Image 1 (cartoon, one colour):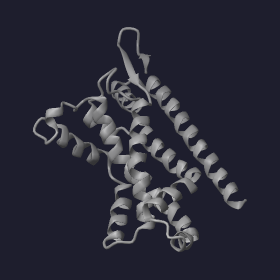
Image 2 (tube, rainbow, N blue to C red; image 1 turned 180 degrees about the horizontal axis):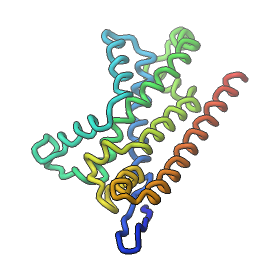
Image 3 (tube, rainbow, N blue to C red; image 1 turned 90 degrees about the vertical axis):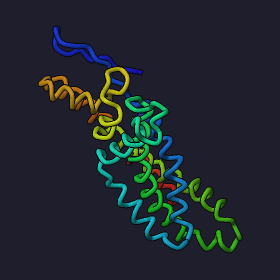
Image 4 (cartoon, rainbow, N blue to C red; image 1 turned 135 degrees about the vertical axis):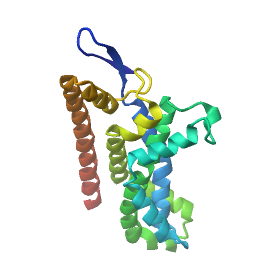
Length: 224
């Protein structure tokens, strides 16, 4: 799906891809990040604290660094260059997965550690295996974990640096709302850039409102 934006009458018509790429990235990041966060909350192994430190540090990974890493992997001289993915929506998804997965994993670990402290002894006494325990905790904390997913979605929606590097800001192919804002600002079309910014802000507010709703729902259910 795409949204067409028209600039000055004599200028240009460009197409902005909208959230399907971000949604795909967040789904993939959730598939990776939620089990990782649950495993870090439940399992005890040598180097666990170091892994937690790394995951927490990657929450603040600069987008341009993530974009550069993916660019090097997908460039012609890189190990995945033969796939021809650079400057495609797939490259943008990969970059966003790299950025969002640590966020979802870290937030999920913090939430599930609280559940593990509360119910961990029951799982141990019942002899439940670690894999089943992780699966059970993910189900038990699903409403709280949805806020972690929405946090990742908010991060993906606001991303610009990494996708500029790996996507190339190609109209109709790899141009998102954030990269369009950067482009129109550089062109001096501040009215269009401001309009896109207001729309993006509205989307982010909607995401955070939804996250707050699910957070409150989880608290009410925990109090029952």
